[in-house]
Length: 223
View 1: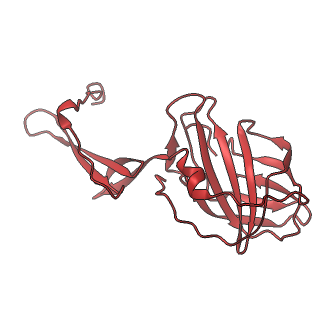
View 2: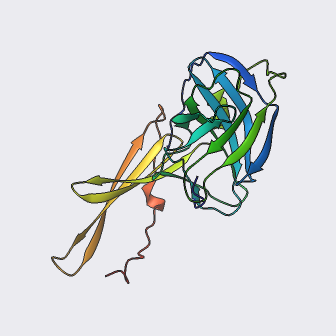
View 3: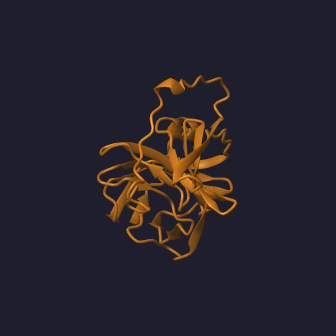
């Protein structure tokens, strides 16, 4: 994960879990503030649940070339899904140092006999963890509920998409998306006009009080 800091909507995830483990040791890590909470061997895939504590970054994201490697066979298993963490170049924004963020990564299914893996993100300053040893003798009786896990730290997604060739910047957080398309007019001098779109995916009504909305102009020296 890049060390500079979707809004994923809460998921009703139904997973058939064969076994889940929390007795995990790590030989080496490039990211000391990344903690593996649990590894789930599901029927069709493998889930690894993480907690990341922000030490100095502004945002993080997951590269889609993430994979795990079975150290017994050196076989690689690709990333299938990232839950509560955007795929680059969308990012999750942090508000402050020390902020915690929970997320889960789903990979192709590991063999049930796997005991040692490497977790590799092939990117500069990636989230790489080596020699992850899974104690198969100690199972967790109840698997981690992903919906509850990610709801503790809702993602704040920032990204850019294009409309008619123009960049639209957006934020998604707790079911609300705000997108802004900034246009310019040179008819009578130069004027900037923000076109704002607000979408509510929360399933409940929300009242916005725009009387307290303010805007700052940081574009004067960007001619």
